[in-house]
Amino acid sequence: QVQLVQSGSELKKPGASVKVSCKASGYTFSSYAMNWVRQAPGQGLEWMGWINTITGNPTYAQGFTGRFVFSLDTSVSTAYLQISSLKAEDTAVYYCARAPLGYCSGDECYQYYFDYWGQGTLVTVSS
Amino acid sequence: DIVMTQSPDSLAVSLGERATINCKSSQSVLYSSNNKNYLAWYQQKPGQPPKLLIYWASTRGSGVPDRFSGSGSGTDFTLTISSLQAEDVAVYYCQQYYGAGYTFGQGTKLEIK
Image (cartoon, rainbow over all chains, first blue to last red; front, side):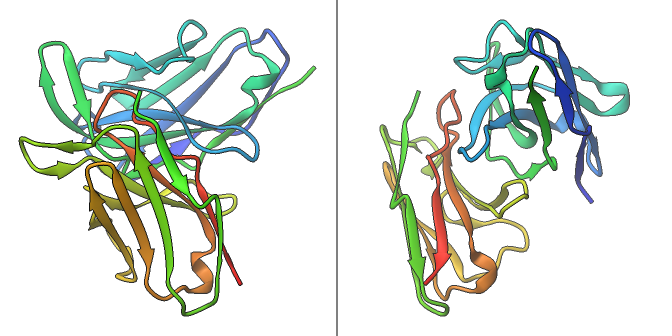
């Protein structure tokens, strides 16, 4: 069965970095895109961006450029989210979510609905 | 980015009654070449990740009970729970995947009256 298993909760100080992992199993890793979604305490879902698991090309949503990096290790079917220069407002649950890959037009590819989600990783930033 | 607006923000319905949640997109999410609406619905229960309920606006996800249905086209969509069960208490989100941005609605909290 499809599973996305994320790394455990993190407590970090402001200015530090964190790397969250999302290990996929039960399907062919490169056949689906991988997304990252943020949920601040008591708030809704915010799409951060996605990474094309075929090309490794990341796409970042507005507001998630600069300090946020998506990466892959296809040899272990794992996606990563790294956040640097952490701020208190980065405190949130971070989810990875799989999506079927759609068509590509030149360098631009598309994806569809998010059909499986990881369990979430709570990142707390506090001094 | 496409803006998704849900209504109402919260909803209380009696057990066994119908629950209806609306979602409006700032531009059409209907792709004319394949006549598909690029709209999904998710359910999030407390302390759990979201779960896919509906995709292509009206196709139920794997294992989703048939009391859940999705309808609508273009810019206006509806999620209907035909007979509310206690386990349906959750926050429900719509999402468009038509344009880059993959934006979510703000969520609708569904409770038992």
